[in-house]
Structures are given as C-alpha cells and as structure tokens.
Length: 287
Image 1 (tube, rainbow, N blue to C red):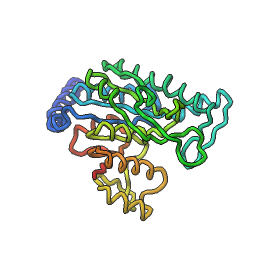
Image 2 (cartoon, rainbow, N blue to C red; image 1 turned 90 degrees about the vertical axis):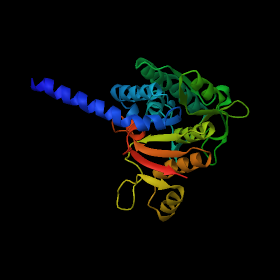
Image 3 (tube, rainbow, N blue to C red; image 1 turned 90 degrees about the horizontal axis):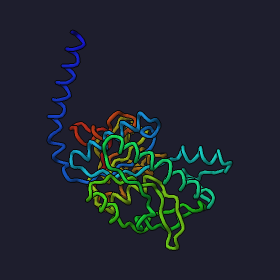
Image 4 (tube, helix red, strand yellow; image 1 turned 60 degrees about the vertical axis):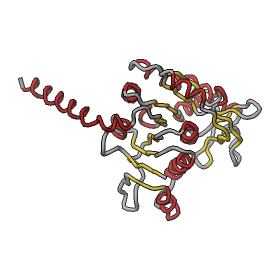
C-alpha cells in the first residue's frame, strides 16, 4: 500500500512538472538548439541513453536539436592501441597526418555512429555526418606548430538545415576540410560555436564537467553579459580551461546566436533542466 501511494505521489509530481514546463516549451517552439556533447554524458551507456532520451524529447516538443560531439578519451585509447604517440600544446592535440587518420576513424566511425544509434534507440531519427560533408566546415590551418589542426573559416549549414527541415537530428563529428581537400582536426567546442552561428541558433549548450562559470568566491553565475565575461577574463577570475569555452560563447553570440549556456553535463537531464525550467542549469551568456 505504501509503495502504491509513493508511486501515485511521484506520478502527481511528474504531471505537475510537465504542466509547469509548458510556458518554457512554448517559448522554444520551433527553435534550433546546438548541443556540444562531451565529458560525463559520453562516459557510459547509461549516461548516453539518458542524453539520447532528452534529445528525442526536445524533438518531440518541436525543438530542432543539433549535436556536435567530442571523443578525446576514445581517440587516446585507439592511439595507444596502435602505438602512435601524441602530444598536446595549450590543450590542443598536435595532429600529424597519421594522427588525423585515427581521429577521423574514431570520431566519424565509432563515436558518431554510437551516438546516432543511442538516439535512434530512443525513437529519434538521427543522422551522422562530419564537418567535411557538403563543405559544412571549410578550415584553415590553426596558428602554431599543431600539424593538421584547423580553425573554421567558412560555415555552410545548408546540409544541417535540410536535415532539420525533414525532421532528422544531425549528429556532427568535429572535423573540417581544407581548400585542397585535406582533413583537419577541429576543437569540438569551436565546431559547435561555428555551426550554431551559421544556423543563427536560439541556444548553444556546452555540456562540461563543471557546474558553470564561477565568480571569485567560487559561486556559479547564472547570467552573464559578454562585457562581464571580458572583465572576468581580464581580471583572471575566468582562467584555465574555462577561457576557450567562454571565448566560444562570445564568438557564437557575435555570429548571431541569442545565448550560450555553459552547464554541467554530469547533472541528469541537464538539457531539459536548462530549457524547460525557470531555474535553468548553468551559466547563460548573452550579448
């Protein structure tokens, strides 16, 4: 009897939450949301299944999710198995032609298709591609001695928009093509920001393994302006690995994205919490 009552209370709470989410669902109706997937959300089949279910939920609510993924740990594992040594400079993988072949194999193959399969298993219609497809991302060689690491110079999101218009969920591996057809390894956050800007997305969600942007006292800031981000970076409050993420946010906003949210991908249903609740789930940066 007690178990039955507890289940009834849970059902009532679920119904109330769904009802309270309605204004937020309506607010995002028809919008395009780019999600950078990495870290904890890719760490286990259970976490991936949960993320995939949330993505399908977004599509069911007439929101257009676009997934851009990373895959660093998987790349490292394959390079170790092949006995290919790799090094990093300022957090970026030095990418020799040999390394790029492995990167493309892992990202466009195992990782990308695994995410596609997880979304499809939850009832979605996901399609995998990379920045090389249909000249989605044309890149130039990044500055420094990084080998085949690229920076996006041209974004043509027509192939992504075409998939969205047909009800598909694009899942994009962070690779780009050079003017001469060469393959570039591109930072996943950078790719997500570039594609979000090209699509003029309503939101860019950067899933990380931290709670968000923190102030000098260590408290998470839920709302930030671009100017505040500049000031906090200059003063050293924003430092280390958070700098490239906030820079991605600023670049995306400059390209036309309405807002960027840096949020904790370790939290269950992080994307739904951010989009469908008044409280949100991370640090929102606006122009």
